[in-house]
Image (tube, rainbow, N blue to C red; front, side, top):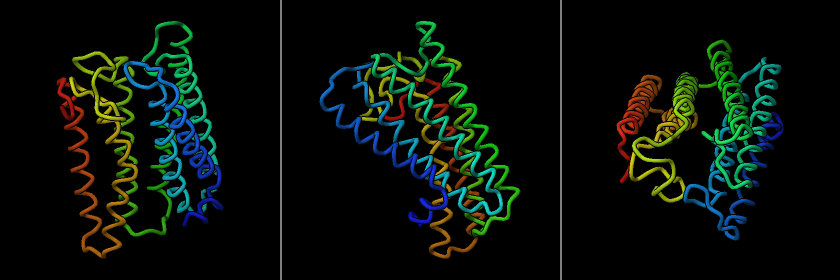
Length: 256
């Protein structure tokens, strides 16, 4: 499967591999650079985003692999997504290097411009996923029905996380009841003192992988009514996503 993906979906697979490499490089750099932004090492955020980009790139490559007869759309999605990720990661790394935040930063006209560019990049990526969802309803996919629906539900939940991300951007903050920064969980830095909208964003984004994998597991073990069970799992997942979103809105920490 891996070899086939590098042959048939090479741009996204190589992009993902480069992102993992960048994560490893910054992990080493962070050991020798003690500079902090909002109380954490300035390279933690770029590291997290590089991993996220890598996982999203490789997952999208898997999805595109099964879109037979839509080569032009697959190429468009692949290369546009790569361009979007490049712009976003360039800004995130540059702002970390400058010793300032990348998201919700409107302190200067230059910072505001960069944040606006990132916003446009996110909107473009969201539209790409809307197109991917459309194709997964339109195309004939050579996969079990439960997995196809798992992918559809995964994309829909991912889009819900994009809407929630837009809410964060509108309020120029990911924290509720406390200032951004402060005490947080190790590495992921979700607030342990107040609400943190990043929790729901994380949960929604990774439905992109979790829901299809649940369906794949059902098919692997030949569980009956796998499509219905996948739908129930997706509904429960959405309920959990909604719960952690409301928890953050009420200023309650996810753990703490």
